[in-house]
Image 1 (cartoon, each protein chain N blue to C red):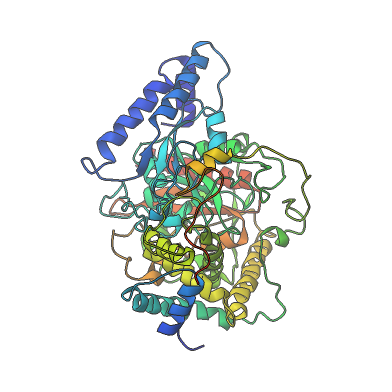
Image 2 (cartoon, rainbow over the protein chains, first blue to last red; image 1 turned 90 degrees about the horizontal axis):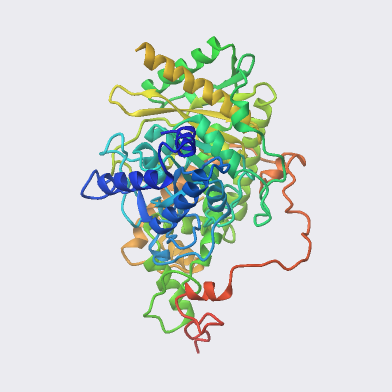
Length: 483
Length: 105
């Protein structure tokens, strides 16, 4: 179901927001738990809040009042975002039982636009992971292939849309955590430009990289959500004071004449041949639609993963120092002194991947290593960003594969951190450069696993990015009809 | 650069306020060395004279007005209610957070 279909049906009275919420809760009850398919995407349901909001929407619809752009739309929220009255665990034991006493801005904006907040969604602990296997509350299964991962870290957010548990969800992306699971689950996932969407109420992982963005079934739905979410927020000083484009209206403009860059660096060794073929079909389709498709160079691409793992872990080691048992969540009871309480709480509360990243980040920032690792990575981040700025001097969007492989099997990479990190090889560069990106479904492998194409655009040019995304999506629909 | 020793792992864990078990230490040593081995690729690049980039905005030449560099107006605005904050803490007296003994000797 699309956002337009929900809003139209609620406005016309052919259904109610309450009935829709109940239908989605029924689907979650049937399939999300261990008695159903065991997808495990929801960590907590917020029935009371959802049904109160649905009743408000239904009352407004009955009176013929103007409805918000998301009126009656059932949505889910990644568990790293604060939603008053519900838990916010960030997938970690250290925040077990914590209920934030306020709403994050993105959450509040969705509800103000009429959305019905169904509950909180599973994710890798503190958004650290590429498979959702690092959650302290169990892995999430890919609804399209139950023996495979949904991707991460926003695996629950991607799976919930793919399984029909929610019409849209919020995720966060630090190095690929929206776009990669979107590709693995066959849904649309948007990484907005750094600063485009407020992060107030987000449990921070790496502050120079973290972004909040939507998962949806269609590009138009993503445009609708982004229009609601985007904009300056006085509660987040990193939110940009720039006008928000009409993303939905922009989808009407033809893509004819747009210049599409194809980076050779994204088509090298390790790219699955079926994914390569699917991306080449997308590029052929864009040529037919009148785009000028030409090669661009992003020469520092191979350095994006090592750069990312220095910068993200360094920032995480600082951000996660706030989890110490004093103000929220877990506290170890068997400590006689403050310093022992800190250490025992953190040892009991953090999982292995979070400890690994805190140690790596602390190491990279420690005396004697700062210049060799942290400063060096910041310099290479500058080079990677300049690659994009130069490419966007020649083209309007850059198109390539979202992931090197389709969704891998549960347990396949859990014992090899470097192999797991390489799952993000095509996503981290855009994260470091701060540009926007979107993953759009563009077919399936012979085994029926979803394939995503990545479209990247200039800082704050989500309008052009989504326009190309809609064209790609339209071509997929056309192919299905022909087939 | 030589590899990370068990001693390094313990030192960094102490800096990070982490207490690793005897089983965790060798595993973390192995993983850190594997990741740092991958990160060593960065040394292939000559970055002499390249400015370190800390934030996205600084690469955009003022195209983003992110407010971070200027002071906001010094006005009081409502924040989350203190009682609500205290209610989710592990231990408080209603006004302050309570913690175990701070001075250890």
